[in-house]
Amino acid sequence: MSAQHATSAELELYVLGALAPARVEAFEAHCAACEACAAALTREASLEMTFEQVARRSTRVHATRPLRAAAFGAAGLVAMAAAVLLWFGRAPAAAATAGEGTASAGGAITHHAMDDGAILDARNDALDGG
Amino acid sequence: MKAFADVLTLPVGAAVQPRPPAVRVESPAPLRAEPDEAALCAAALLGEADAWNALIARHNHRVVVTLLARGVRIDRAKDIAQEAWMRLVEQQRQGRLERLQLPGLAVAQAAFLALEASRREAGVRRHEPLDEVAVAGALTDPRADAEARLMTEERIDRAAEVLAGCSPSARKVFRLAYGGEGLSHADVARRVGLSLQRVRQILCEVRAKLRAALEGEDER
Image (cartoon, rainbow over the protein chains, first blue to last red):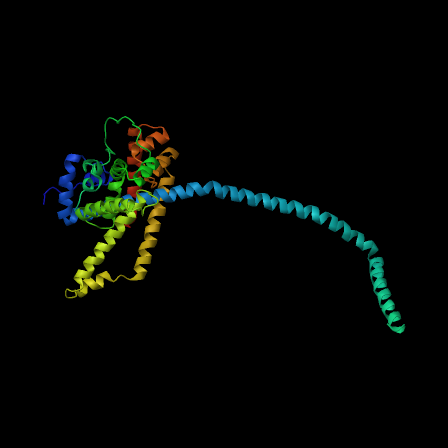
C-alpha cells in the first residue's frame, strides 16, 4: 500500500473524474488497500449522489412551479366566475321573492284551488262510477 | 475478466479514459461538439462498437461512483462496472435490448451485479460458523431505516434550499450538470452559452455551498 493518503481535494477530483491521469492508478491502489481512504472515498461518492438528488429535487420544484401558479390562477378564475354567477343568480331570485311577498296569498290560493279541483274531479268520477 | 476490447474489438483505453478535468483548470479547452447521446445510443443498439465505446467512455465513471457510494471498494467497483457494460453489450447482441437509456441502465445493471455478488458472498459465509456480533449488526432495525430515509430527505431539502438561494444561472448550470442527463461540462457550457471555465467555476462554488450545508447537517 502506498503511504500517501488521499487528500480531500484528490477525493473530490477523483469523484468528478478530474484527477490527473498520472495520479489515478496510485490513488486507486491506495484506496483499495487503505480502510480510512476507502471510507473517505465512499463518503465523497455518497455526497456526489446527494448532489444529484438535490439537482433532481430542484428541477422538479422548478418544473412544477409554473404548473402550480397556473393551477392557482385557474382556481382564482373559477372562484370569480362562481361569485359572478351567484351574484346574477341571486338578483332574479331576490326579485321573485320580493314579488311573492305581494302575491303570496293569491299564489297559495291558486295552488290550493288547483288541488281542490283535482279532488272534486276525482270524487265526481267516483260518484259516476269510475 | 475480459476487457471491453475483447468484447467490442476496440482498444480498451477509450472506454476507461477519465472525464476531462472538471476543476482547477487554468485554460479552458475549446468546446468541441460531442456526439449526440441519442445518436450514439441508436448506433449502439445497432451493434456499432464505436458507439458502445463512446458511451462507455462517457458514462463508466458515473457507474463506478454510484457503486462507491454504495460502499463497494474501488477495485470491485471497477470490475463490476466492466461486467455491467459487458452484460449490456451481450444483451444487445442477443436482441434483448430494446432501449438504451444511459447512465441509468448501466447503473441499474451494476447495482444488480453488486447485490448478486454480496448475496453470493453471504451464501459462502453461511457455511462458516456464525459470528453473533456480525449478525446482530447486519440485522437492522426497520425503524432505523425509516429514520435514515427521513434524515436523507431532510438533508436533501436543506441542500435544495441552499441551491434555491444561488443565482438563477448557477442553479441552471448545477441542474444541467447533475440532472441525470449525463451531460459533460462542455455540453452544459454549450447549453447555457457560457465558457467551460466559467461553468466549472460555478459548479465549484455551488458544490462548496452545498457541501458546507450537508456537512454542517452531519455535524449537528
